[in-house]
Length: 274
Image 1 (cartoon, rainbow, N blue to C red):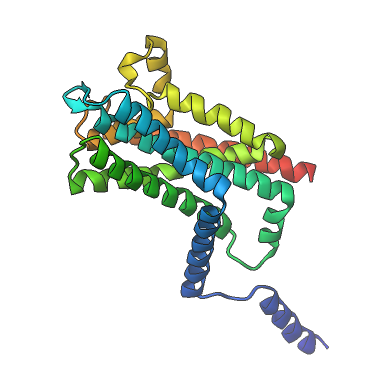
Image 2 (image 1 turned 60 degrees about the horizontal axis):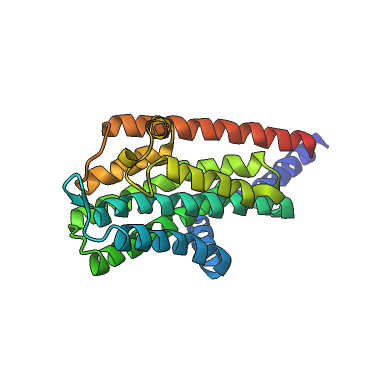
């Protein structure tokens, strides 16, 4: 009897937990990422806002109001290219990841994903990939606009650097969005996202050079990841910047860990209330 039960038990456990090769797992991950990017592009309310806001603000403040002006020996149009690239990456993550996950939680979509046999991290990684893809797309559009209209001279190396920084910025900003998704009520997610997105952008000096803002704002900026990412952008573009790369990476890493900790708190709270 036991000799029969043992093979049956091992067979049932094997059926319950099927093995998956690394190539199959990677294929699932890339497929989920691709579908998430396509879905975001087709969601016009998101894609037009995520792309339109940084392009519109850059055209207004970087190309029209400050046309021909310089700051620190660099054209304002080139300087603000870095700031509005960070602005675009922040918006893409906070709204695409934060609001998107909050709505998925409210609709029960996240529970369905968890119950499916897909890799547990595929859902979250697809959201990060989507935010990174939009960040890169925004940088490309801003660069084309700056070169064509604002007489911005940028080398291929500089362009590669700011694209890489924007893609990297999707990670801490996505962690911010994830913390927001698990901590705030889903019905308030869009409003909270705006309360994070716009003040953080202003306080980081993304819209206007930080030196033109009050001293208290300049002090607050050092605690924001968008400020440190912007300083990395300015350095890559040969514009005036503050701090070292190690300092900026350390601040961004600390912020990312803090957001992951808040996400864990919010996740456990939802699990207890479920």
